[in-house]
Image 1 (cartoon, rainbow, N blue to C red):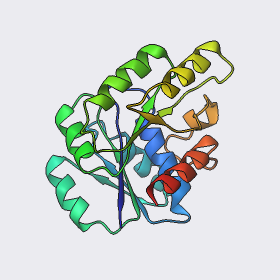
Image 2 (image 1 turned 60 degrees about the vertical axis):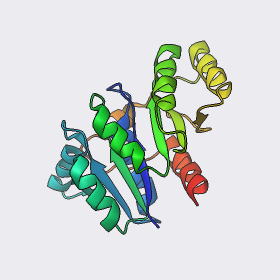
Image 3 (image 1 turned 180 degrees about the vertical axis):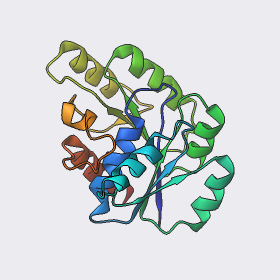
Image 4 (image 1 turned 90 degrees about the vertical axis):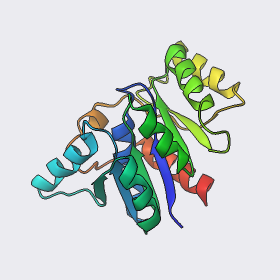
Length: 197
């Protein structure tokens, strides 16, 4: 059975594409995986094309989708996991992706303002859709990071992954390449598999 995992946030620049590609790569060794690029900017598609052009392709297919293709692909895919890279400013596509989700990952910068916005987004989703926050670009040594973690732990409406993604230049520099090291993404992938098995 395919597990559909939209990576969703109404704000741009929170690491949706990086999360989709790194989680897909982390799982590709043990599962069949696809990434569906629903963002008109096409960052996931460009990432895959750049990696292929240097003869180090990503270990999964990246498909460009829209709302119409989404329903057809949900019916026809045989992948174990599908990650949907959603656009930040398209509520119709975000709603459509959430509507087919087995679990929604909501990446966010670790600031109280960003996480409060994320919680509002999560609360606007259908209540039966499981969702989990993922803190990205985190400096785990800061007071603000610890405050955000504590704030998330106090939320009943939104679960959170127990691992956050630290700010790392290597992650930033992996755009256009097959990510060679997953850092915390490998732990998040393990949590994802456990939550959806």
